[in-house]
Each structure stands twice: as C-alpha cells, then as structure tokens.
Image 1: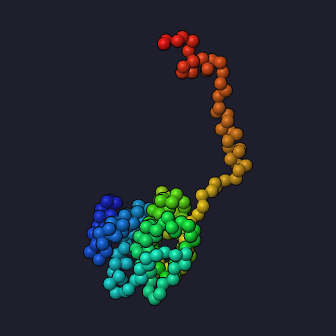
Image 2: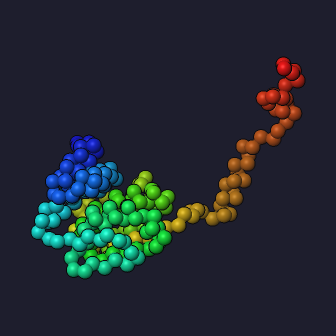
Image 3: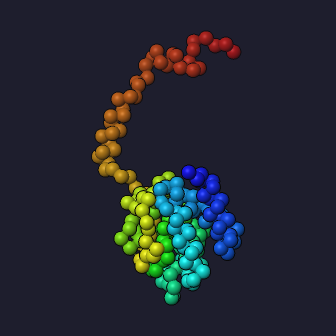
Length: 203
C-alpha cells in the first residue's frame, strides 16, 4: 500500500511535469493526498484528467463570483480549487456560489474542504445530483466512497453554512440540568481545606 507521503510527492511531481508551476503542483499533491485519505479516488481521477488535458482546452477562472458561467469549454477543476482556496475570505461573504460545466469535479473537493477549515464553517457541495458535506477538513460525508466519479458536472452548487446548534434549546436545558448533578456545594470543610485557607499564617 502506498503511503500518503508517496501519493503527495508523486502527484506533485507529475503535476509539475504536466506543466503546472511548483506552487500549483504542491497544492495538487496535498489535494490528491487528502482525497485518498478520505476514501475517494484521487489518484485515478488525476490520471484521467491528465490524459485528457493535452487534447482539450479547459477554462481557467481567476476571479470567483456568485454565478460563474463558462464561455465555451469546461472549467479546470484545479484552477477553480486553487483560486477558491486563495479567495475563500471574500467568497465567504457570498454564501452561495454556482459554476456550470466543471471537468473532473472531484478534484475540487479537497480544496473546498481545506477552505472549510479556514473559515470554520461547513460547506455543502452538490455536483448535479451528487452531494457532499465538508466538515472543517476533518471529514467529508458522501455516498460516493471508493466509487467512480463522473468526469464532468453541468451544475455545481456550493453553500457556505452558518454555524448553529444541531439541537433544540429545550434539549440543551435538559442536558444541562442533568449535568448540575455533578456540582458540589461548597461546605465549611471544603473552604478550610482550600488553598490559602489554612488557620496558620507562616509569613
């Protein structure tokens, strides 16, 4: 079994050989490593993308807006991923972002997951009918583990979710009341035994 370090390094070198800068290649290596760590076919998808790349012009997108429409060809997932990560602080204010016609969209996922960690918010992603929930780069929820991923997505919808409790206030009050059973009332004996409460002054 290949180590995550091997996957990272080899993906980085292969990306540099394809024509990406060393900085971009390093980000791609981290991306593929993360996909494999979370149980997705990062290596396989990257190879598929690189085999097709010399024969098809993919669009790069420099500035990400609320709605992003490709002019002619599919968006490059790596360009989208890197720019999304770089611009996440301004993107956070948009809350909802859409892209049309993205090639090999799985390659975007780990960039979005790392973005989730930066802003401290979960990110919901939908590639056509496939859904992901990215949780602060700690885990990725999906029903697509170890399965082939579509090589394109006509519609990509990204929601930056506001942090909120996953329970009702009444449930919290009930739980807190139970926790109060562990509270200890301060007694005279505890006061006397507390630090600095001795009767003898040694100064």
